Amino acid sequence: RIWIATENGLNRLDEATNKFKRYFYNPKDPNICLIVKLDRQKRIWTSILKKGVYVLDQEGKVLKSYFTDEKNKHLLPNSYLKTYYEDSKSNFWIGSGLEDGIGLFKLNNHDNGFTHYLPIHGDSRSIISEEPFFLMEDKENNLWIGTDGGLCRYDHKHNRFEQFKDINAPSISSHATDKNGQAWFGTYSGGGL
Image (cartoon, rainbow, N blue to C red; front, side):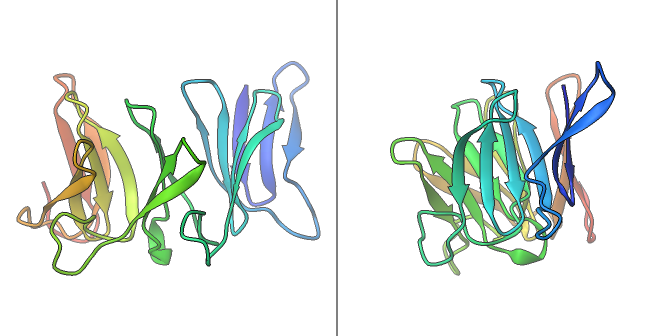
């Protein structure tokens, strides 16, 4: 199946009929779908601008929803949630990216709430920026986060971050892994790796 995020909801292509089925479509209230990701359980994760994150089965039935609420720190903010990653420990991470700068969130499976990570001025063990662009794991399962403020690595054991400020790259926006498993990172606003 092919799922497509659009400015008018989520679309699924039926390859047998060559027609689309729409989800979250409302012509009076556009539902801007920002991401579509498949997890290891073959569930569809999608983010709707200013409405939340939804988990669907392969038929499009909503299994879970994580609504936005700016006042509750254990819920997602009402924002532009565009970064999604499922790590090797089956943690789900969601981030804002771009101008919103609302930080990074990790789903707490025990209570369906979120742990919210924001930079703390003067604390080198906090995330380096509130605008995460991507998350990726290297061959040792280290979780790397590229942000508008640079690069950091998450320490699962101690629930903290390691910031890499000495690499002369103010904004890490892309990544790739070569055939030897070596991680490479790209920038967009100067510097380079």
